[in-house]
Image 1: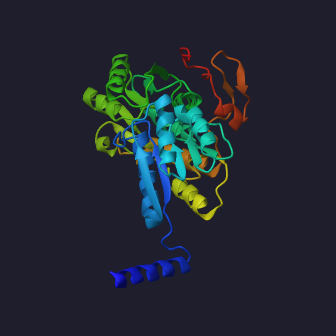
Image 2 (image 1 turned 30 degrees about the vertical axis):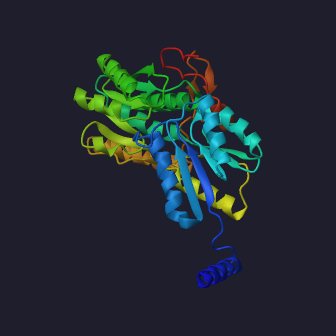
Image 3 (image 1 turned 135 degrees about the vertical axis):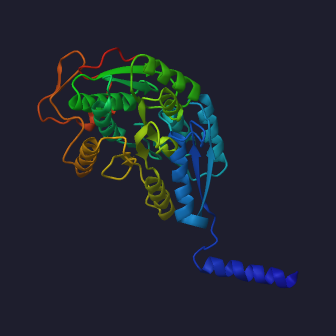
Length: 357
C-alpha cells in the first residue's frame, strides 16, 4: 500500500510538473429541442458534439439533454447543466433565447452559445447559418422540376429564419419558372412526424409535386415517397435514406467546425462574445448530393449558383424585389443588408397568404 501511495504521489507530481496534463476536463453541454435521432436539426447538432469529442479527445467531456421544450423547462435544464459543472453550454433552438440570457446572468463564469438568436451578453454568444443560401438553390431546383407549378412548403414557426427561407426559395423558383405558386402550411413545431406528414399530404392533395420543409423529421419525404410522383429535399442533414426515391438534394447544417473552434477558444482563454452568421462560403451550410433525378442542366445551374454564392459574387436577396404588397423593397442590383434580413417579417411579391402572428 505504501509503495502504491508513493508511486501515485510521484505520478501526480510529474503530471503537475508537465503543465497539468491530468487537469480537469473542460465540460461542454448541449440543450436540444428534439431527439438526437430526428434525422435533421438535432441530429446535426449532435454530430457537431461528437466532432468535439473526436478532435479534442480526453481534454473534454460532453453532455446533452434532448427533447427540451422551448419554455420554462429549458431554463431548468440549463441551470442544472451549469450546476453540474458545465464550462460551456450550447443552446440549440431559437426559443431558448430568453432562458439562455436569464441563466447566463446567474452563472457569469459559464459561457453560453445560443443558436439562431440575436441577444448577447458578456458570457453569451450567438451563432446561426445562412440557410437562405441553400433555400435559393432548392428553389431553383423546385421551380425547374415542378410539373404542376405548385410547390408545397411546410413552415415550423413564423420567425425571421423561416420567413427568409420561404422568400429565398420562392424568389428562385419564380426565376426558374414564372408560373410557380407556393402553398404554405404552418405546423407550429420543429419536430412532430405526424403533423409534418399530415401537412405534406394536404399539400400533395392541393397539387404540390415538390415539398420543401423547415421542420426536422423525414416524415415529409416519406409522404412524398408514398405519393409516388413528388420530390423533396433533406432538411439539415442529407436524409440519404430517401436518395433513391423522392429526395433530390438537401441543405446540410455543418456545425462541427464551429463547435470545435469555440470549445478550443474557451480552453485557451480566447473565448469572447461573438455574433456569427456563416453560410456556404464559410462551410457552415452545405448542399447535399444532387441526384440524377434532377436534369443535368438544372443540376449544373444549381451548382453554379452554389459556387457564385460561396464566392460572394451573388447574394440570394438581390433586387429588383418588391414586398408582398407591391411596394419596392430592393432596387435593381441592390442587396439586402443583414440587419433587415435578421428581422425579416414580410413575404416578397407573388407569395399568397398572410404570415401568422
